Amino acid sequence: MAGHSHWANISAKKAIVDKKRGKLWSKLARAIIVAARSGGDPKMNLKLRYAIDAAKAVSLPKDNIERAIRTGTGEFKADALEEVLYEGYGPNGVAILCEILTDNRHRTAAEVRKIFEFGGGQLGTTGCVSYLFDRKGLFIIPAAQSTEDKLLGLALEAGADDVQNNGETLEVTCDPSAFQAVSDALTAAGLKPDVSQVSRIPKNTVDLDADTGRTVLKLMESLDDHDDVQNVSANFNIPNSAMAEINAG
Picture 1 (cartoon, rainbow, N blue to C red):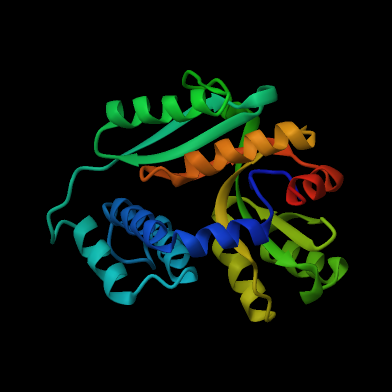
Picture 2: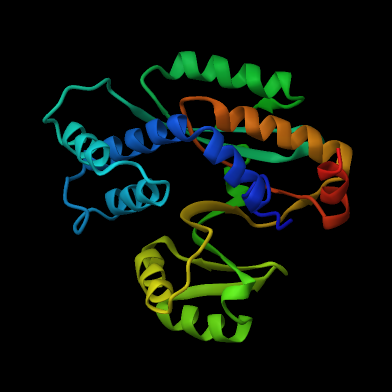
């Protein structure tokens, strides 16, 4: 398993996404609403374009997308949503970031704090771990779709920073400002990333054994399952041998 900000391997996260599709649609619609406050035209509003692309990637219906945009631009009434970043620690000192959209930050903070504590971690103060992450555009592509050398040339020409070979996948990172250009280049080349998003990527990772990895994964899933949590990032890595032990039960 590649570490970085992805808290489980791709197949595991896909299974969770499929199981919780209704909840995911709701989260993505809220993200569109917030992004649309800065303008309802995705050609002029990159944040809105990214939110729409993420919604389309999991088949959010077109009507839902359009309703969310119109809500964000003020045509429809909606609860006031606030963007908040909560920071904390998991077992073994793993740094965790939760990107939140909430209409009541005090309620959400109390609920998220409880999830951290129940999972063997603790909610921290503002700035306690965010410095350990960089905000980057991230694309994860199955290695069967391209060679590392071919993808490296294509991605760098489009403005990417780096390409890493993680065995079964190739990982492309870029500055958020280059996200759309890199995405367009990958699409033009016929590549279909499993992950395509602006994410918080750790500068360094902490290796976990199977027991600790199992506990951290459970905490991450509990955080991800909260209605107000849009994204969860962490700086752990589970080596292949430990992940195999976890998957074996």
